[in-house]
Image 1 (tube, protein in one colour):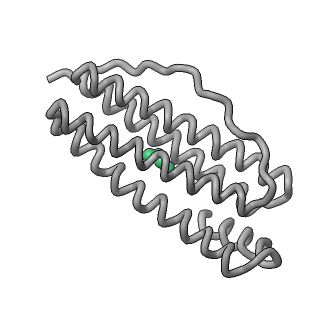
Image 2: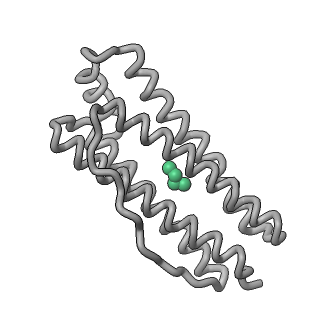
Length: 162
Ligand code: OFO
C-alpha cells in the first residue's frame, strides 16, 4: 500500500527538521573550531552527520513506500554563542523540540493507521530518549566542573566519539 498523502507530508516536514538540526550542529561545530574548542567541534560535527543520516533514513522510508521526497528551503541557523555551555543548552533545547516533532509524526501514523510508519517512528521515539540523555549528561558535566573545567570537558567529549 502506497503511503498516505498526509503521512508523506508529515515525513517531508520531519526530513526538513532533521536537515535543519544537521545545519545547526554543523554551525555549532564550526563555531567551536573557530574558538579553539577542538574536542567539542569534533563531537558536534559527528552529531551533525547523525542528523543528516536520520533525514536520509526517513527519505529512504518514504521512497520505499512509494512516496515522494520533497526538499524545501532550510531556514538559516544561529551562528555564534557566548560560551560552550550556551551551545550545549541550545542543543538540548533543540533535541527537546525534535522529540516533540517526532511525537507528532507518530501521532499522524496512528491517525492514518499506518502500522509500518508507526513502527518506523517508534525507533526515533527511543532514539530521542538517548539523544536527550546524552545532552543532559554533558550539561551535568558542565555543572559539576564549573568554568575552569571546560577545557577538561572539551577533551573528554572529543575522546568519547572517536
Ligand atoms: Fe537528534 O534528532 Fe534526529 O531524529
